[in-house]
Structure formats: C-alpha cells, structure tokens
Amino acid sequence: KQEVTQIPAALSVPEGENLVLNCSFTDSAIYNLQWFRQDPGKGLTSLLLIQSSQREQTSGRLNASLDKSSGRSTLYIAASQPGDSATYLCAVTLAGANSKLTFGKGITLSVRP
Amino acid sequence: GAVVSQHPSRVICKSGTSVKIECRSLDFQATTMFWYRQFPKQSLMLMATSNEGSKATYEQGVEKDKFLINHASLTLSTLTVTSAHPEDSSFYICSARPGRERQETQYFGPGTRLLVL
Image (cartoon, rainbow over all chains, first blue to last red; front, side, top):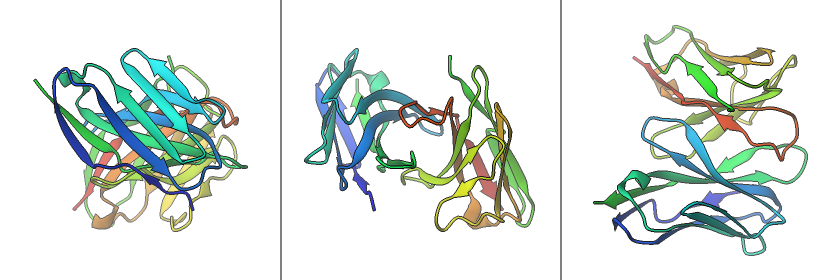
C-alpha cells in the first residue's frame, strides 16, 4: 500500500527565506507526483506536476524535484512571502490501471512578515 | 479555465437526514469525477471514482449504500450522504478530470463542509 509522508507537519519561517518542503513515498512505482496548495477551509490548487520520467518542474518561485528511486520529492520556495502561508500537500498517482491519488497529510507553512 | 464548483459550500443538518452535495465542471466536460473526504489535519482520502454514465467505484471501507454517487452528465456529479451521523461530519472535496487518461490533471472543487448535529 502506497504511503505518502510529509514531515514536519508545520513550519514557520521569516519572510524572504528560501525553504524546502519534503515529501516521501513508499512505493516508487508511481505515474506522477503533484504538489498542491490548500488555504484554510478551501479546495486544492495544483502547483506543479512531475511525470515519473521527469526530475523537476518549475513555476515562478516554485521548483519541485522528484527522485523516484529513493521515493522522495521536494518543493523549493524561493524568497518566501506571507501570501505563501498555506498547507502544501504532496500526492502521487500510482502506476497501473487506476489513477488514484494518494495524498500526504500536508505541511502547514506560516511565513512571518 | 478548468473550474470546478461545489454546492453547497457549507451545510449543517440533523442526525438521520440526508444531504446532497453537487460537483460541477463549469467550463469543461468531465468524463471522470472523484470524491474525497478530509478530516481535520488529515490527508484527503479518496472515497469513490465515478465515470459518466456508469456506476461509481468505491474505495475499500466506504459504504456505497451510505454515500450515493450519481454522475448523470458530463458536467455534474452528486454525492448524497444518507442518514447522516455526527461521524460523517467532514470536508468533502470533489475533483474532475476531462478524460479517462491518467496523465490528465484533476481539477479540484472548493469543498463542502458538512456538520451533522
């Protein structure tokens, strides 16, 4: 059974700091990996999607990397801003017939002004 | 583009009543829709997958007679929580995918907060 782990559960940093959020998964037979943002009481916004054949994806100040063999992904946020405060969820799509997304519990990020 | 809406955004009901939640894809046709449940500080858990015009596929441990899913059109799926109990109180999120291919992104709705008294 695929398990996705995100540690720590919460992180607080001062504005302007570069930071890395970690995600690990137990089964490397994934189809792709996604990072999402969730604001309190809201739905999910897809930030970056990395196919299993890719090693990284970039969008603005965000860069996500994938090391499928070791079961790890990181989300790098450059020059953090208070508006980046949210919960960041990592999810993997299993390879195989179904396309089920397995989510981690998320990392709640607080960027202090 | 790729907007998914949910209605209602918040609902409070008495124990024993049934609640219907709608999920709509506003600017695309969704062949496949997914229903998730999220408890506080927990990850999203997939409840069921529905393909337009066919029966939903439920995940292990999800009671199909309690959580009725109807995906009658390419833009609308509904989740009905029947005979709701306080333990059904949760945040329910749907997502929609334009096609059946796994590489296509799922677009998520804003969620529905259900509180059963």
